[in-house]
Image (cartoon, rainbow, N blue to C red; front, top):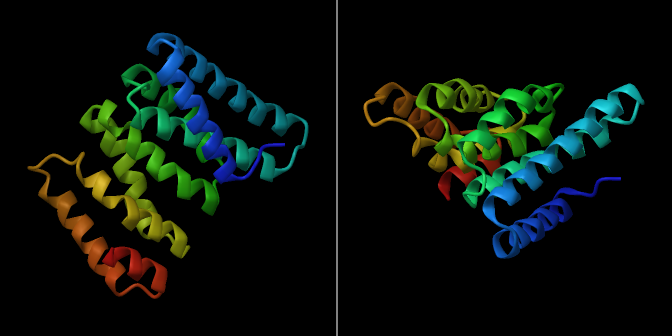
Length: 186
C-alpha cells in the first residue's frame, strides 16, 4: 500500500538525493519517468481490479510529488514536463478531490518554467483561476500559498492576469475561513 504524503515526500527526497549525487542526469530522468509510468500503470490497473479510490489518490499524489521535486531541482526539463502534461495530467485530474488539488497546483507551477507561455496559461493559470473559486477552503489556501510562484511566470505586459491575482489576494483577506485569511497575510 502507498504511504501517507509526508512519507512519500521523504521517499522522493531520498530518490532525488540519490539522483543528484550518484546518477547522471540523463539516467535520472529516464529512471524517474519510468517510476511515474509504473505508478500511473498501477492507477490504470486499480481501475480494472476495483482497488479503492484511496489507493488511486495516493498514487496520483506520489506522481505529483515526484514531478514537483524533480522539476524544482531542474532534473526534469521541457521534455519530461511535456510528457507529464501530454500523457498523465488528464488521468491525474480525473475525479480529483481536495487532496489531489492541494498537490496539483504546486506540481504544475514547478513545471511552468519549462512551458511556453500559452501552455502555462492553458494548463497552469487556468487551473489556478478555477481553484481560486473552489468552495473548499483548503484549495483556496493552496492558491494563495503558491500565488507568489505563479505570478513569476506571467508576462509583465499581461496586466489583466496580474489584476486577477490581486483581486484574488484581496478576496482572501476577507475570506470566510481564517486559514485562508492567515495565509494571505503571510
